[in-house]
Length: 316
Image (cartoon, rainbow, N blue to C red; front, side):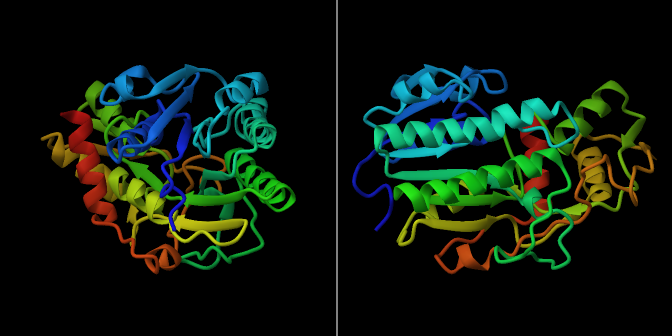
């Protein structure tokens, strides 16, 4: 039986963001009663234009426990997507507050309101530089190399402890690079903006050989909903990504082609620590998604196809 089969009232934290707003649209489309909590620091009401008149929108912050306790009243299922999305080095305090403290507050508000189910979007960055590729959920030890990855792993640990201690049923999704309309961050967004400013030269961080998995947003939402069926234990973890990967030079070439540009010079920064784009950048990433596929999910698009669709959506 699916988590959503009993017509629950759900809340999506970070529901005005990129992935969150697409999830909200889907939940509304299948007839659910949806609340959205977002502080609009990264997300926007514009992202919710398709569903804003069909949801209860709450401007609130996961770093404020009172906001969450109020928002989670009479809620059965929490989709926790609110987070600082920036993987690159930043203020450690931001990662702690928004990603770790925010998750703690969500769990506390669930405990106070006796909410039964949590769905959390984690990240492939929790694996760090995995020596097994494709990387399964059972891989370990987990050694994140970025503050972002560390914060996501800390959040996972809190969710595990709360689930076993207080009887929550929780599902964690470790996401690859998710791409599509409304995304305002990541390599595709950066490259398009750079080429709009200078159509003759593109700066590429690192040595260009970084190779990662890219998943189209609708495939991501399909995967999230697929994992909600037949939840048995206190905690389930699923990888969610495409079946292949693509290097950053190929991403750059696709963008140049889709923008109709010619004779663009690629300038590589050389990067750090063996050609990474920045300190904490995982150079090679491909997730083993066989666990979720066993439940009937599979992505419609490859990494290259997802990148191409995302570029078209961005430059449209």
